[in-house]
Length: 90
Image 1 (cartoon, rainbow, N blue to C red):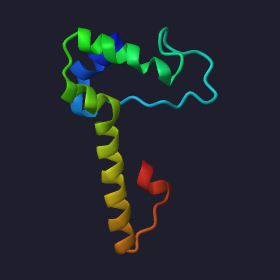
Image 2 (image 1 turned 45 degrees about the vertical axis):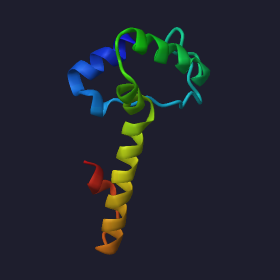
Image 3 (image 1 turned 180 degrees about the vertical axis):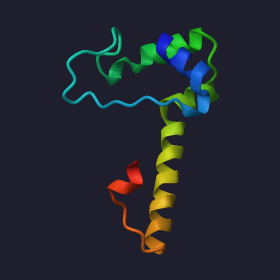
Image 4 (image 1 turned 180 degrees about the horizontal axis):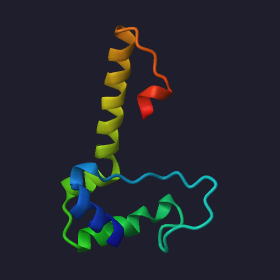
């Protein structure tokens, strides 16, 4: 929870999201050994004063928003005949 609180202070609530890709990992944060532990993180963030809207953004809504924006760019690029290449990724 400390890391999320810090990230929110640095980047803002609209730029924080967590994911559950535990495949191949060796070490995980204590208390977050797998996605079933997210309830503990959610409870701790609630305890620290985060509201339902903020938690929604952190847990899924920010990620969904970004993926939708990526999809819109892909559609636009396809319509313009632009093929993605390494040069698009800096």
